[in-house]
Length: 160
Image 1 (cartoon, rainbow, N blue to C red):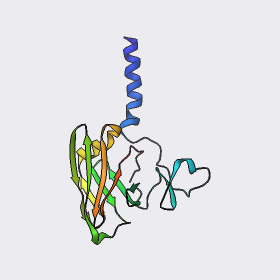
Image 2 (spheres, helix red, strand yellow):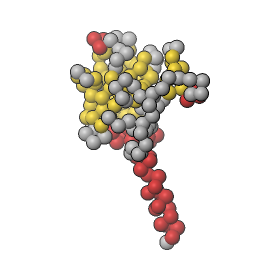
Image 3 (cartoon, rainbow, N blue to C red):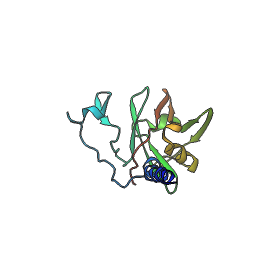
Image 4 (cartoon, rainbow, N blue to C red):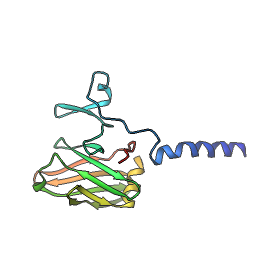
C-alpha cells in the first residue's frame, strides 16, 4: 500500500508540469549572445531561441521551406488560438490551418482571417497541442508560393 501511495504522489507532482502552465513567468526575449548560442538556431542570417517571445507576446515559429516566421498565441480558457503571419504578404495567403496527426487519424482546423491575425477557437485543438509528443501538430500556411509548414512543439505557456 505505501508503494502505491508513493507512485500516486509522484504522478500527482509531475502531471501538472506536463499538462499545463507552470508558475514561473515566461522567458523574456533577449538579444542573441555568445553564451546563448547553444540554445539558438540560425535562420536566414539571424538567430533566435525557441523560447523567444514574439512581438505579439506569443511563440515564434520557423516555417519551411521559406524560412519565414509566424507567431501564435493561445488563451487556454477560451480555447482561442491566434496566428500572426506578419512575414507574409496578406493578399497572397490562400489559407492557413493546423493539421493534427494522432496515430493514423488526421484532423484539420481551419484558421479564419481577421483584423487581429488568423484565429480558430477549438478545445480539441488545444487538447492536441497540450498532448506534446503524442500528437503531431503542424501549422500549414498556403500562399502563391505553396505550403509553408512548422511543427508546434511542446512549450512553456506564455500568459496573455
